Amino acid sequence: MVEQRRIGYRWHLRALMAQRNLWKSTELVPLLRARGINLSESQVYRLVTGTPERIPARTFAALCDILDCTPNNLFEPVLELRAASTADAPRRSEGLGIDPGRPIARRINPSPMSRAAQRAAGKAAEQAQIRKANLAAGGATRARELKGQVRGKHYTEWVDTIRQLKRDGMADEALELLLECVGAAERDRDGREPAPAYTLMAAVIYRQRKNYAAEVAILERWHASCPAASRGPGTSQEELAARLTKARELLARQSE
Image 1 (cartoon, helix red, strand yellow):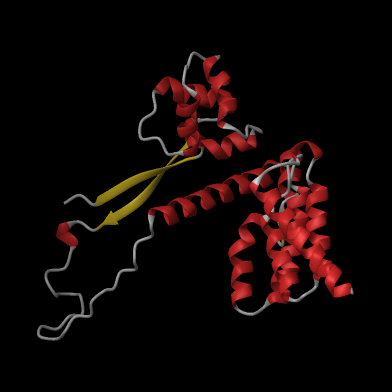
Image 2 (image 1 turned 135 degrees about the vertical axis):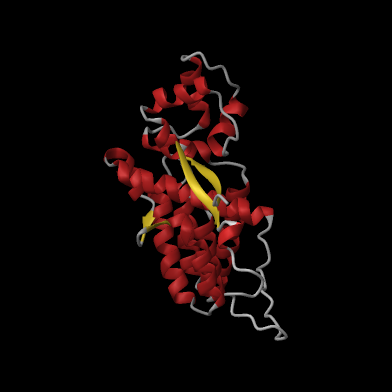
């Protein structure tokens, strides 16, 4: 019998867009329209962020023209499963190292990932692929990607490590890494407010140590990095502003 093979594929549209400095799916809409492909913003978003099951040949050709690439750059077939033919498979226990009458160990399969975990893992892998493509692109794209690097990884990839260090009682190591991530978030903000999570985690450690002066300093540093146009009501800003007010009160009491 013929060998059984299951073929899948990888869709590299987002990574190729990043190499061409196209960062939003909406940027593709007018480019496709100029080539006679009229898709809504939501349709293009799904095309960019998902893995399409079907795509018209004209749309495929338009994407290749926009990105100056070949179909092989966009679409990569991969072997997902390879099974031996029935003719080559051993009969019953033959060749399997199983003796009749002896108990057979049961294989315990790991619990399947939740859909949310699968989406998170897929998103992380996709982002890592984009960052790798950006670094390989050279020039301004590489320089922009390097702004967010901390110890050879993008600062957003260190969250789980920082949390594990804290769980393991290694607060000094966690704080050192956090401060590096704070700096990377500031370099990578591109006119926006820096990612607040690292500042907040560092502030929590400082408060636990009753180092209120350091807590005030790190929170003020974050607020100073926010562009004036973006200052105002907002979940992150309100949370950090409230924490800064409390830290200043604690510092004042400590200084009395």
